[in-house]
Image (cartoon, rainbow, N blue to C red; front, side, top):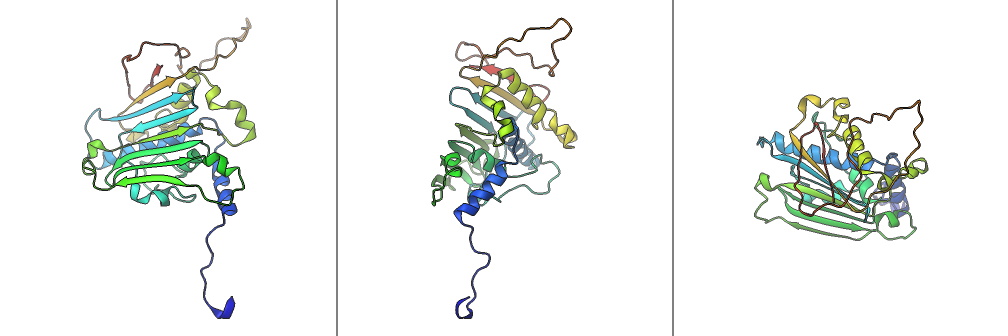
Length: 285
């Protein structure tokens, strides 16, 4: 300490230290379905927050999931409470979270969006909330994380605090777009790339490992489930898995009623049929 002057301690983290912290977060996610689990949990939490604010119109709540094989893109939209645009830098920092101690919230880590950001080629979040209309784009985060560039990422963000819908809860909602997804981060899981899975497997994972499926029961929130309609849409060409030879002594395994066929060409404008938490309607484009 020069001349006995006081200085801040500890100082701001270096870029190298920041990368190490972000990698530590991402390495907590070891399964290919984790991105679906995190994004869907955020949507369910947002819906429950708005529902708690006495917005209980029957049949109102919905989550739409788009799974695009051609661009390795996952889109999750909901009509919940929206993302607080005024606090986005704080919430999207490595240690940031808006998860409190509310019993009804499913999310535990509160860092799922960081995982989505730093495992994508482009991350976009669009939202309408009581803060106004907000949008942020972050590009090349996965590439930056694996580099040694001594510069921070540049982002594009916009918050319209005077938007006419900021005081209309029925207009609230969030859309998260994760393009060119590259997770998971553990070598033992890379052979289970999510975009190498069939629509049938993706549907089964959503029903089994996310808060709109069976996992809510294990988290102790089954008595508080909201009436959420869910729509799952597939785009692009799904993988073709080779048919396995059947042995006379073995039967086809039961994987929880996931019986949809692989994606095929359909007429545009086909009718969407969302259903509630007891099942996820699948559309393939």
